[in-house]
Image 1: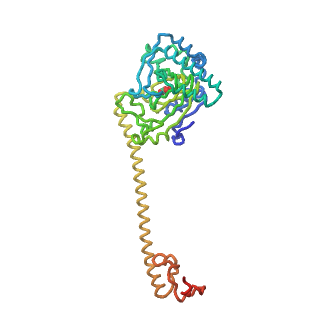
Image 2: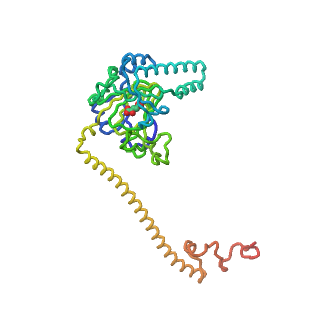
Image 3: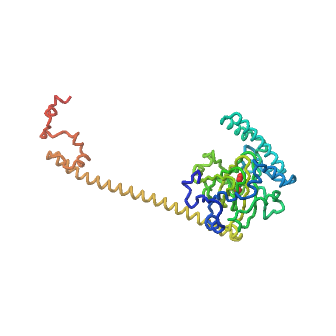
Amino acid sequence: MEAGGEERAEASLRIRHFHGTISPEEFATEIESKNIPGVFRGAVKGWKSISLWDPSNGGLDYMMEKVGPTAVVEAMMSNYEHIFNGDLRSHERVVLPFSAFIASCKSYLEQLSLLSVSSHMSNSARDKEICEETCSTSLDATDRLYLAQIPIYSVERKEHCSLQVLKEDIQTPAFIANKCISSINFWMNRARSRSSTHYDPHHNILCVVSGQKEVILWPPEACRFLYPMPIYGEASNHSDVSIEDPDLSVHARAKHMKEYSQKVILNVGDALFIPEGWFHQVDSSDLTVAVNFWWVSSIMSDMVDHMDTYYLRRILNRLVSKEMVCIFRFVLIILFCFIFLWCLYGRMLENNKKYFQKSLFSSFLSVSLSFPSSDPKIGAFILPSSSTMPKNRSQHSEDPKLDNPSNNR
Ligand SMILES: O=C(O)CCC(=O)C(=O)O
């Protein structure tokens, strides 16, 4: 794992890392059935799309030609910056020709290469940084566009897949070849972009074809720290909290969310399994292209509708039992502390009584018979300490000066 609160992430929920691909059986038993994320480095590096779609190597022209001039797509347009929130108030859907989007990517790429040439000429690292910053902060309307979740393939809407032709350049990763894929989607952004924190109701393999993605993941049990939007709204699977700058006066529990997060960086050819229900926030670098595969988990497909109320009650029951175990532990701790304090108090009372009796006896001895207490503790408890007690006249000091009142100045 690369960063975040992984030290706190339960070992059983940590992201698993693999080099290349694994067998469908291993994937099913070790990853999918446990509902834990997995990174498969270089698993899709053999796709034709890796070289054919590469924007820095003629990929934009290739895609434009392959898809053709008539294909239209429904893109997301963010109302501010480059953050794409699920909440419909923060973005709108716009329909545009795919070729228009690709043309705007081409001009962005030209702008980027011009800036990089001029920064090389100026030969200063700071100038280069300024160029890059300028490029990604001067947002025009196209920079607020994101081709998010554009269908390449869909079981339900086969005829509506405007980018269907791109399927020829990709392959379903071997370890999920036996799954009944419900949709394959295309994702592409011009300037850097962020998909805000949300979960999906499907299992997902997200594959990077070009650019880079930084993904932060949280297990479903972190739900209470991420404040998903109301269940009856249009974005019930989206978190209402800003990850960088949570307003703790509104979302107090969000202070724990980082402890449960795990971060992974996906480069070209990498694939990530995001299990259903796992929250994820995705940051994409400029001109990133990706493809994802969704399929319905067996947990969901095996659930028959008429059992919903029963499942709900069983799940509630499990959650309540877990809460009860916590409450029981808490009550036990309180009880233990109470008993401990009670015993301590009883012992103190007991000791006081003993000391009191012994002290009376020792005072009687030291005062009446002019004998100091043999136990220094006893005298210290009720009588003034021996150093502050007036010395018995019969006990002469070694130093004659101390016995002479005139020397006591
Ligand atoms: O790549 C992205 O921006 C988001 C991807 C995503 O949310 C998904 O694959 O479910």
